Image (cartoon, rainbow, N blue to C red):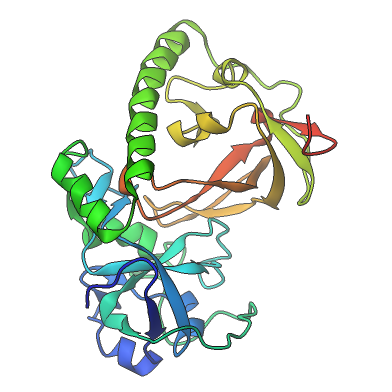
Length: 306
């Protein structure tokens, strides 16, 4: 169909979409999930083509997390609410195969999509263990292909043509990505000499939605990380260093996440999401994942102003 950023589309009916799925409830390896049923028959705008995405559950023997996804888009504002997957709070953007959509002439009066009970009829587990879920995140390794080198210029010409980036956005992203490689090398040298700090003051702030926080400076955060750049298993990723020293509002407290590698739910403590800190198309990735923040990396402030 060749959809691009800004196009308007109508999501096909549930029956039409289910007719495209194989025995694994998927099209070209990408599952259609119960959380997506509420949007059937409605009209939305394409936010971005999903030609590239990061993958956490990589196929065996592969190490490059940026992979190619074909015939798929992200629709503006549509995230998974996790209601059918054990109330996972990760809030992933939903991927939509172009075969599940048809072009529309423009927006229509919308409706609210209130949370409700899990949708019936579409399975969310496989095999004999009901504690192991599958979702788009767990299946991305199968739904994607190994991409060309992430520094291949042809890849970025394709992203420019698709409208994923404007030229200034692409220049900024590549500059940031290069700077982060240098930062990572410096962090690794620093961390090889400095063990992660033990339990300390600030580990538990009990932050609530609506409160304001300031992200600590890089050197403060480095002291809390282990050699894998993690704090108790949660990584402080390259994307997050750009937010150091800035103030944000707490969006959600995070208690439950679906581990994409194992398919199992994990309980999380002392962790929040911050408004305005989603991943920003790093290396062309379309997932726009909410970044997860340990309370130890933040300090409570009274207002958004310094």
